[in-house]
Image 1: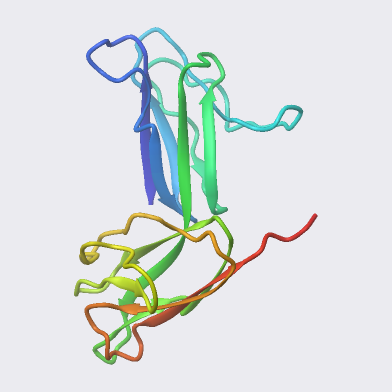
Image 2 (image 1 turned 180 degrees about the vertical axis):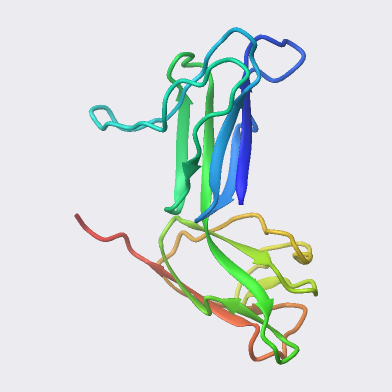
Amino acid sequence: MQKRSTVQREDLSKPKGFSPKTQEAQVGDAMFWFNNDSHTSHQPYPKLPPGKPGDWGPSIPAQNPSQQLNLDKAGTYYYQCAEHADETGEIIVANAVMIGPSGTGAATFAPATLQMVVDQCVSWGNSDTSAHQPTPDQGSAWFAAPIQPGDISAPVAFATVGPVPYHCALHKNAASEKGTIMVNAPKKP
């Protein structure tokens, strides 16, 4: 899926800088920016620790789109404009779990066990014809409402290492509608 953000600073009736400031995506999505200005160029680039190189492509000329940025790793990416330091934004890239039909009438969570690193996020995409509501087996619910067919949930962050078993709150007795988020400590360099 492609995500789009705009950037501008000339039209005072619109938000200055990147809009939306926070973009949510899943691993495998792509991102691009469109420059709404008619005279000013912009260049989104990752905010990295000093001395670390980073580049998301060349400057975006007025009234043009950026190159596509492939989002292939989960995490939160903060960025700013190379030409206007006051223009900032973030992309929250979540690990993806797909909810889909199993052929037996009940849906499945794929992957059934998702491996991820602590402080990353997960979002669920519903490709089934019924609504679903993933919820942890223990603790507070992740969502106040079900994920409707064709929708993607908001990202859920996991801050504690260990397994997090979950199920569909709407279909508690469906054996196939269970999953586990396996939250791992980051690998040491």
